[in-house]
Amino acid sequence: MTAKTAAERKRAQREREAERLKRLGHRVMQLELYQGTADALDRLCKLGGFEQPAEVITLLIHAADRLAERDRSLFAELVSVTSHEKKSTQAPA
Image 1 (tube, one colour):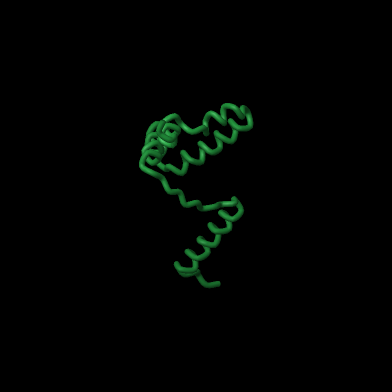
Image 2: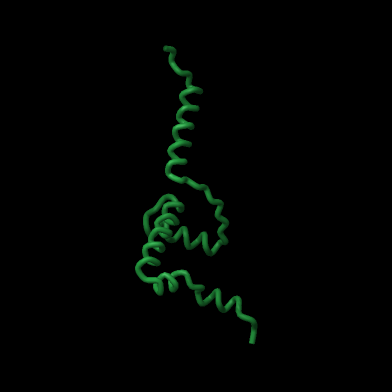
């Protein structure tokens, strides 16, 4: 039995990781953010002590899902358009 080369070990590691991610149903999503949204995400990271914005996004998705199951009206309020967005989309009087 011969020892594996560094390249062979690395290839095996990548294959194991790919299999693990496949089992977990891993999916990569591209997300484009405007400055206001990026600023809000940065504030949430800082407030919660998170280093990775993806962690905040993941936790918020799961929390919103639990909220939707418990109370649809609160979920509707959570995802409703904010007042400044309503004002900016209304036609002038």
